Image 1 (cartoon, rainbow, N blue to C red):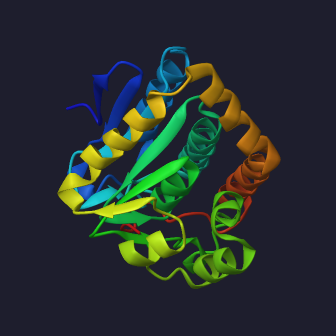
Image 2 (cartoon, rainbow, N blue to C red):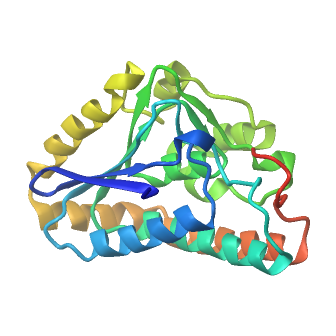
Length: 242
């Protein structure tokens, strides 16, 4: 079974669905490898205007890193390096990205949501930056430009759950719909974007990211993540999930 599903609902629009429903799309090495390959192929498609990142089960977009995956210390570092490449690929993706934020969006799932350009929330959203529980140095790079420094600090330091209505109030979601309608709403949003000038949209995306210095902040955070896994406490390996 593929860990990703691909669909092209319209010209210029791609939908990429995470497909590990049995673990709420927790990311293991295999899923990260498939994501890296898929994002590279999609990024090379100059006709692509919008990428929608979704899920095959509305219980979760992504419940975080699969800390139940049994890894050696070296494999744990390799997986964190894969996470760093994934975060960079989302940040640098040349087309507009839309997250279908449904169900559990925790840890790496929250980073995926924040890393996309636009977000549609399902009414079952449970969004949380859970890294502070384990001292994981992640969250500020993508969240602070979205909600401001004070709110980002509160969400990252506490790790509390943000529901759909609060996400909308914080401008983390452009709209809130029933969970089983979230992907369709995201595709509708993608159509509104894709109807515009493709090169112009890509140019505007580059400017938004440059003005917010997101690439530099993501690179710094990625280096800290790998060092945390290699030299610090690191994520648990084979000890349950976030």
